[in-house]
Length: 168
Image 1: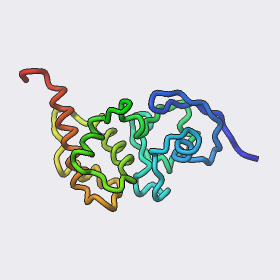
Image 2 (image 1 turned 180 degrees about the vertical axis):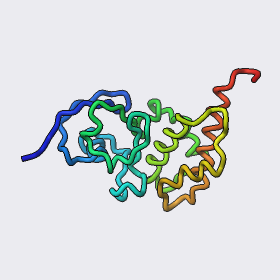
Image 3 (image 1 turned 120 degrees about the vertical axis):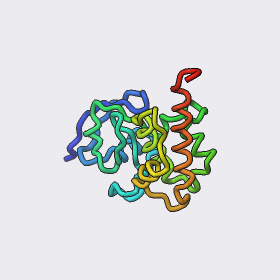
Image 4 (image 1 turned 60 degrees about the horizontal axis):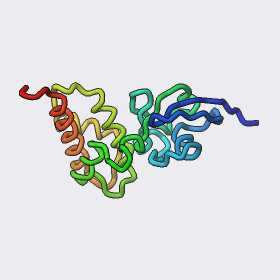
């Protein structure tokens, strides 16, 4: 007998209702039940960060959250960053700064950085040290992190510039 629960959640602005087993992770539910395959599974122990999504405005490791815990929640995955074929500013910065190679870890870095940048004070630019501390939470075996740090800082600067009134 399976212990299933009816849940409702919103993913990237789209509402979903589904029956989910109590033991199924949010990552598996997103990938296999809802088709959001941008959420990657690496270690399945919460260490690598490849499965990072934004759950009610906070970055979480989707491999450590049960799907039933997302009942009534707002979830944002990497598929929700772009506007159709138009990359988000953060995605474009990753491309411009060569912040990816194999790309496996990239969705997790993007979601971690997006959550941080959405919360960050817009008046103070993110320092290199702060950016390095942020990205140290996720693992990448290819890039050496410098491009990722550059992309996060460039996006933060661009967003700050857009927030400032003309002539300020």
